[in-house]
Length: 275
Image 1: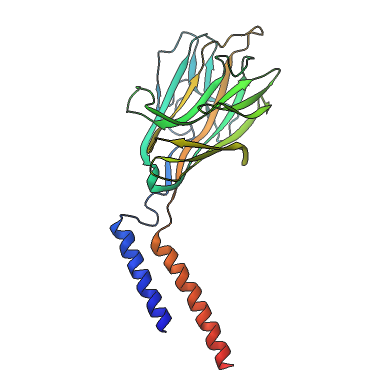
Image 2 (image 1 turned 135 degrees about the vertical axis):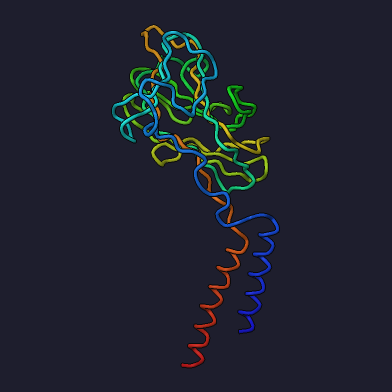
């Protein structure tokens, strides 16, 4: 019983320390946002929580559309047949990276078509996460981004946007839904790593980021120069767009686990002595 008393004291101190630090078991867990583009949205209009960064051209479209989608009945369609850039953003309550174990940025994507091009050309489109002021003022800091770029034919490849590197060659098919996830793992208040996934599998390696302490904005941008010799334009759909967080383990939780293990060992020892 002496060992148990000592461990109970450790648990009490650890819990008190966690309280002083302002840490609670689930304080930073959950969804920052989840957009399914279904309930409360109107087909043919811009999603209610998204802000256009620049004036749309006459033929550019960013609208809710109905049809086949991972979450029925709607998805978010982006079409840009012009040679003009296009950007729009989605703001959410700021997440302080030092307060979480990880951040997950997820979305489902369906590419109708992309113009042919290389990574050095200003074509394709990007999805990114970072921070910025409220309103349509753009990003003040980019943490990570992924770029969709067609090579040849009806397949496309993926690139890491801000640390230019190929994540995967042109192996993804147009007219197919894919689930893409970015997992951000902070290692300090302003530094950490991130990893891209497609359908649950890692692609590319882990990349480092630095100088960013919060995230509160995701964005979609289409590069200018979207016409090519085959007259293909950038058109794609998004669904199930979300940002969620995982909490930092509480100090008291670790101590409770230690106590449980010690209680099991104590019972085993007593059983052996009784036998």
